Length: 54
Figure 1 (cartoon, rainbow, N blue to C red):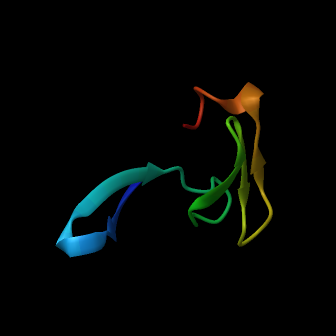
Figure 2 (figure 1 turned 45 degrees about the horizontal axis):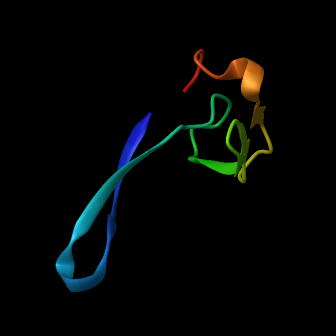
Figure 3 (figure 1 turned 135 degrees about the vertical axis):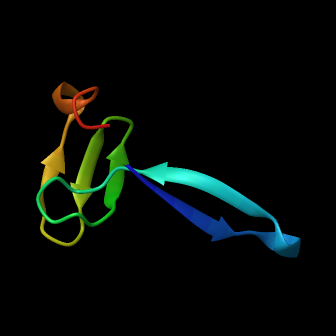
């Protein structure tokens, strides 16, 4: 997983973790609670993959 820091109001920062695509290494977009899709190459992780990759 990759740690990314996003700026918030008044200089506050929040640290979030986003799983990386197993195919191309780009951050994955979340479609639902356990369904992720890479916006770069289209690879998908589903509920059955949870625990193995994120």
